Length: 266
Image (cartoon, rainbow, N blue to C red; front, side):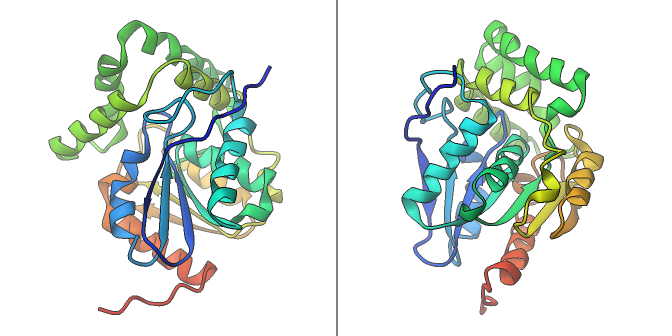
């Protein structure tokens, strides 16, 4: 049985411009988009959710599956506008892609960062993803985050960024929401549906991503028809946090094309 997601917590910034919905990774929350809420809100209405069962969002009544998470994101868009540009990082990118396939009328364009077609593309990756819920139950959120967080950034990332990533994860993840998310990722293999996605897309990946890796992002970009692909230098898996100025510049460049966003005057 698939549960229904309750209304989720959304951080918001900006009062005018196109709507940009940001979907975080499996070990994170809306807090991970602080650089985008701050850096892009002068030209955009930026939303960043806490996925169902994460951080300040209530727990869903049962497992959602990837469709359930995508439908919950669709409700966020419907509540605030007719459609949105959607930015997804890692697991959030997988949700964004399914959202674009399932609700194409709601997605004006996609920005998919350090993501993949899902862990279901590889049995070993799927099995590892499914083990994560037991690891969280055994360690608790803080120790779990301390074990996983440092790998999400490049080896040379400043200690304050590592601490912020670990702190965000520790405050965000809990059961059962994390288990539902992990299963949604483990079961996902979006390769058959990617070619049918019509939304113009920007795919980005940190050059030092040690989690999904450059090849997985390249495979997504290669399967989408209307896409541009960018490597973000000196960034790990969380390129939006590690190199926010470069990342935000690429987002704005994409939106100048897809949303006719004007050049910002200085």
